[in-house]
Length: 226
Image (tube, rainbow, N blue to C red; front, side, top):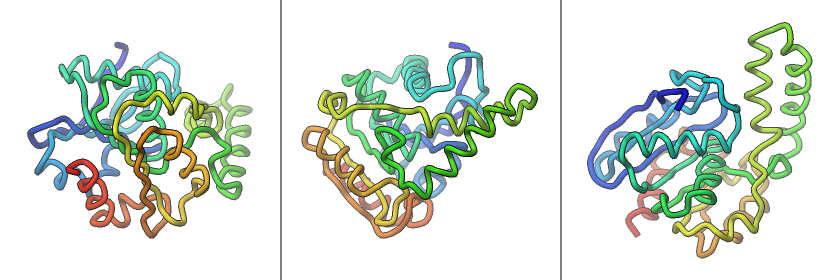
């Protein structure tokens, strides 16, 4: 493996891995780590090129991040784990569950999307424009190149199909905000396409875990403990 993940670890019991969103780091889950660590062995990772984890030289894609997660689990002798992913972290968890179904116990997808079409237009258009501008400037600017890679995750990934979702074995919770940047019908499609998945909408926007941690944590723990 060409990188070593930065991660925060707390608690004992079954492993629960937390995966943050685009351009963020494991600090996004500050309202979750201590709560979940009372019942689980929590690992909160910084994804490749995010936070304190180096970029490395492998492709900067959701599928590579899923393979990075497999390598992290192998390095820490984690045979299988509960996965909770937010936004791009949800996409990583989703791709991982499709590719490595036997390594996921329970799966929580918060604000995930199958492709760029799942994002509301008023959110996606500025992302598309920013991506194109950053790509044009990437030859002359390292910061523009990094920006293009980050935005590219939201333009070109994850491209998961509903047929892919049908192969997920893990018991799954799909959770989003009532005013999420992901289209409501898209979130419902994800839940409908995963066998036996549960669907929960919480009052709020895309960032419900950060803004409404008590409600979010209650929904997640009810699912994990149920």
